[in-house]
Amino acid sequence: ELKVEQNPLFLSMQEGKNYTIYCNYSTTSDRLYWYRQDPGKSLESLFVLLSNGAVKQEGRLMASLDTKARLSTLHITAAVHDLSATYFCALVVLSGAGSYQLTFGKGTKLSVIP
Amino acid sequence: EAGVTQFPSHSVIEKGQTVTLRCDPISGHDNLYWYRRVMGKEIKFLLHFVKESKQDESGMPNNRFLAERTGGTYSTLKVQPAELEDSGVYFCASSPASFPYEQYFGPGTRLTVT
Image 1: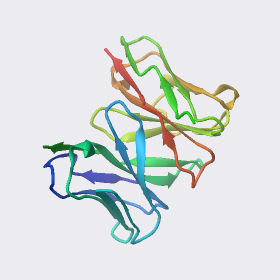
Image 2 (image 1 turned 45 degrees about the vertical axis):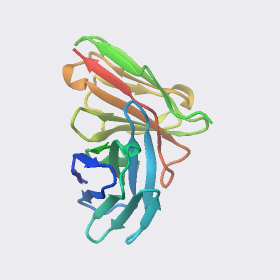
Image 3 (image 1 turned 135 degrees about the vertical axis):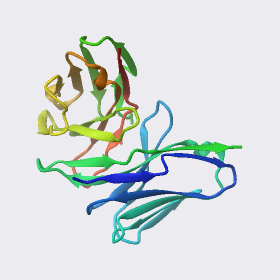
Image 4 (image 1 turned 30 degrees about the vertical axis):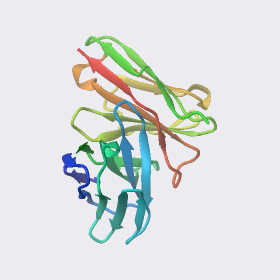
C-alpha cells in the first residue's frame, strides 16, 4: 500500500523567509501533484512532476522530484501572506481495479505572519 | 467553463439520519471521483465512475455509503444511516478521461454528524 508522508503538518513562518515542505512516498508512481487549498475552496493544482529531477517554478514556489529517494519538495521563497493555505502532495496510483486514483499526504497548513 | 460544483457546502445531521451529497462535474468529463477527508487525516479515495459505471469502489468504507451517477452526468453519494465517524469533508473531482488526465476538484461538502 502506498504511503505518503508530508512534513511539517503545520508551518508558521514570517514574511520574507524561506522554507521547504517535504513529501516522502513509499512506492513508485508515474506522477506527483502539489495542490493548494484555501479554506472552503477547491484543491487547486500547482504543479505536476513527471520524472526524476523534474523542477517546476511558479512565482515564489518551486517543486522538485527525486524518484530515487522517493522525495518531493515544495520550496517557498520570500514568503508573503497570500501564500497562507494548506498544501497537499498527491501521487497517482493504479488500483487493482484498474482505476488511476490519487493518494494524498496529510497536508501542510502554512500560515505566513506579517 | 464552470468548474466542479458540490451541494450542499455544509450539512449537519444527527446520527442515524440520511444525507445525500451531490456533485456536478465539468461538462463533458466522463470520469468522476469521490474522495473524503476525515479531520486530521489524509484525503482518501472512495470511488471512481466512468460515465455511469463504477470503475472502482474499493475505497467505500462500508455498505452505508451508496454512490450513483445516473445518465453519466451528476453523481450523488448517500450515507444511510449516518454515524459519527462519517464526519468530514467529501470532495468530488472530474477528468475528461482517466490517466494521464488531471483531476479537477470541487470545493467539497463538509458533513458533520452529531
